[in-house]
Figure 1 (cartoon, rainbow, N blue to C red):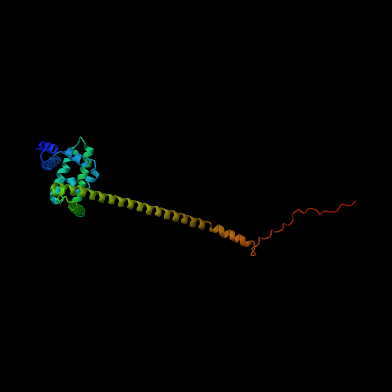
Figure 2 (tube, rainbow, N blue to C red):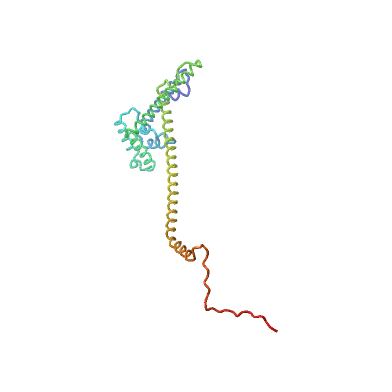
Length: 257
C-alpha cells in the first residue's frame, strides 16, 4: 500500500488525489515507524540519539512516545518497555550508545513521575496548542482578506498535530535556553561573590598581620620613647659629658728669637 501511495504522490495524475495520497502515505509511514520503534532496540537508540536529539529529548512525552493525555500508569508501562529495549545489557554490540539512550529514557520518566515537572511539561504543550490555534486563526484572516477563502492546511488533523508538535519543540527549546542562561548568570554571580569573599579574607588577613606586627613592636617603641625622654625633657638632645682624666695636648707658645 505504501508503494502505491508513493507513486500517487509522485505522479499526481488525478486532481485532488495528490494531497490525499500524501496524507495516506504519511500516516502509513508514521505507523511503520511507531511499530518498528517499539520492537527494534537499534531504531530506538538511533531515534534517541539522532541529530537534534538534545532538543527533541527535552519533551518527555516525545522520548517515551506517548500522548500528553496518557495516564501515568500507561506512561510507566511504556517507560519499562523502552528501558528494557535500550538497556546496555541488551545491546552489548553498542553499549555506550545504549547507555546514553537508557539514561535519556530514565530522565524522561523521572520528569513525568514528578507531579511538578509533569505539570510544567503539560503547561508547555497547552501553550503550544494555544499558540498554534492563534497562528491558524491569523492565517485564516489573512486568506479571507486576500480573497482566498478560509481553509488552511492545518484543518487536516494530522497537519494540525504536526503544527502543535513543532510549536511544542520550540517552546521546550526556549525554556531550556532560558534555564541555561539563568544557570550561567547564577554561576557568574556566585563567582563574583566568591571573588569578593576572597578579597575580604585577604584584607582581613593583612589587617591581622599588621595588628600582630604592631603589638610585637610595641615594646621597642616604648623603649625608644623612654630613651628619648632620658635625654631631657626640653626636646633637645642631651649634651655629651666631658671625659675626665684624658690626655690634654700642651698649649701653644709663641716662638722667641
